[in-house]
Image 1 (tube, one colour):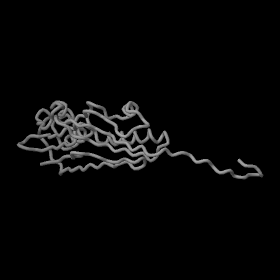
Image 2 (tube, helix red, strand yellow; image 1 turned 45 degrees about the vertical axis):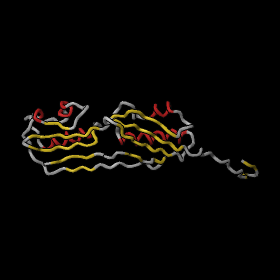
Image 3 (cartoon, helix red, strand yellow; image 1 turned 180 degrees about the vertical axis):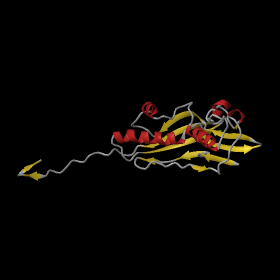
Image 4 (cartoon, rainbow, N blue to C red; image 1 turned 60 degrees about the vertical axis):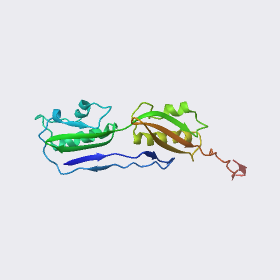
Length: 202
């Protein structure tokens, strides 16, 4: 029996985010019919983890007073693991009378870089984005960061700015995150024509 929630995959993620056109994310969830489980939390087997220890993963499955894992507990644990942002994929299988949690961890960010920015310095952009070097990569957060960068430029009158984040895979489950910025032209306010009113010009 298999039920799980798959996150994003891909060796390269690049999405242009225009000022008024954020890129949407998509997640597909698949749940098979419920089934009672006799296992306890201590009997959960964990596969695929590298940085997150087994007990931390088990801690997201919280049984009721009986101490047993029913379908509701398993569903809640699965959702909670996904919501941590630590994993790009989580699957739960029942095999050999045991509950097996298989995870694919999100990579660690090696560096965050900015390209094409001339009007805004790297230090200011680094202070605004939430994705940080040595932190865990979160694709929704990367998109949010691109929107934050766009907003900085909007405040200075550059409304046609575009920001393209790229995730570049590196060895040992690490990535480099690069934001390529097209600053666009500064949009000014044109002078208003003089309008006659009561024999005078405003």
